[in-house]
Image (cartoon, rainbow, N blue to C red; front, side):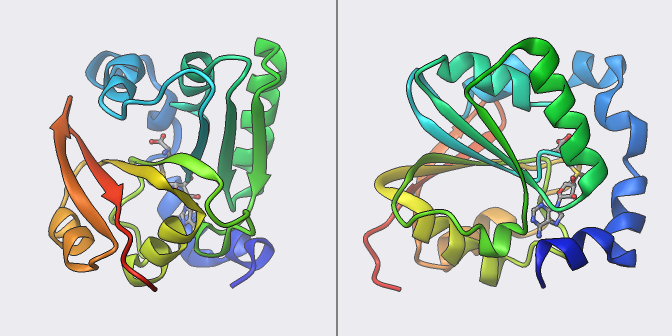
Length: 188
Ligand SMILES: C[S@@+](CC[C@H](N)C(=O)[O-])C[C@H]1O[C@@H](n2cnc3c(N)ncnc32)[C@H](O)[C@@H]1O
């Protein structure tokens, strides 16, 4: 589905209304310190990072600060209200290394092998992000040395096992509650 229709679909609007304001609450920051969680993703200065399902930008500004001016953060979400909110936050923070895009992560339109780290933070499992379509797209956009960083909340169901079973990623372990995977050379 294209991002315009996906962003307007009843299913996604119903599901994103559930977390609603909690996505940005102070209490959440207390329980889920973005700096601490992002340290588990091993992102670093100068990298190109893709943030899938940025929502209202809970992780966006912190990730942008970590990768610095020489880095490039692509914050992606299909919901226009979220994209506008994150654009405003980025503008207010004066950050120039963030590109906020309204798009479906199943068809990012990004160049192949262009991303160092793909962040899947707080987005899985989600019915509009089926792993059998999402993982091949993440594998396509990641550089051969690229990694996938996955923080699962509130439940993980079988996500870590699914990722390994796909054969597209190998296990790099878990740090600060974040699962990390190396893009494998497996041909698609
Ligand atoms: C539970 S929210 C989490 C938002 C943010 N990562 C956070 O932790 O605050 C899930 C997000 O995934 C986005 N999403 C759902 N399906 C998507 C898709 N196919 N492509 C990109 N983002 C998607 C939703 O619009 C929503 O913003």
